[in-house]
Image 1 (cartoon, rainbow, N blue to C red):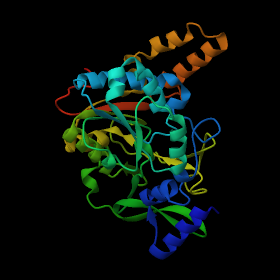
Image 2 (cartoon, rainbow, N blue to C red):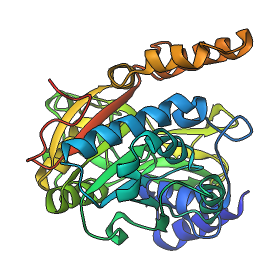
Image 3 (cartoon, rainbow, N blue to C red):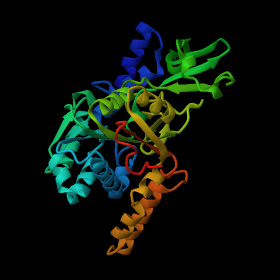
Length: 361
């Protein structure tokens, strides 16, 4: 039994079953034993690989997007470049390298990384040592100074705690984690107040046992409010579905393999698909304007990933060229283990900005 499981069991014994969202929050962000707080989970030696770790092309093209948006904003002399959940700092590092061809933007930029993990903060500081623009770290987007901002969130929202409701004979009830016979189990809790307003029409006739998921809107409304107040745009890339729907997407991953979400709390990554329809609704409600979602493949192709891959291969050895082709396929392909269709991208902008680069209709 992990130390975190001991703490979770004690909480359940004292207070009763905890919601799936509370369980996920403890597993990922407990100050002593949380998954993200205690380790570097990225890369071949970790538990999973994100797009920036697949290829430098990903971060470089995000840099292209940042530069295009900055120009759309009128090239302000001061701008905040913000990344939510920056992993090892790879995306920001690659983006800043691409931005060296836009020295005026680098002179204007102040980089802000939103991170809660001391382990990952140390990795990011190492990666970004000598960065071409000043970098600072914060626990929340609210801590970033006021002013126009360009925000990037790659695989950030999927790791936020997700609530689940289960359809029972008595209606929709919050799905919880309890203990039965010494084992952590899922169980139905109390009826969820106000859930009807969130449920899509497809859920009205859902069978008993169906699961509906939703996240609190705090991060999305903070993002939309920031953009509406101070100007700028945001790019959100994550795996998920374009429309709200019924379905259980909570998953645990360890050593690049799926696992039981209730096994070894604190030792596994827990995520759930992003509901882009709900995300867009929350951002719009706070004053931002949404564009998309489009697939990751479409985003990267509009930003020039094929040309960038061809350029990298021009003088590459055959084995290096093969790796570039494999990375391109991983980022843009539609197969089971590829990211191109599963991952979606949405952009949010100040209403006066118009459609950000790659999202023009």
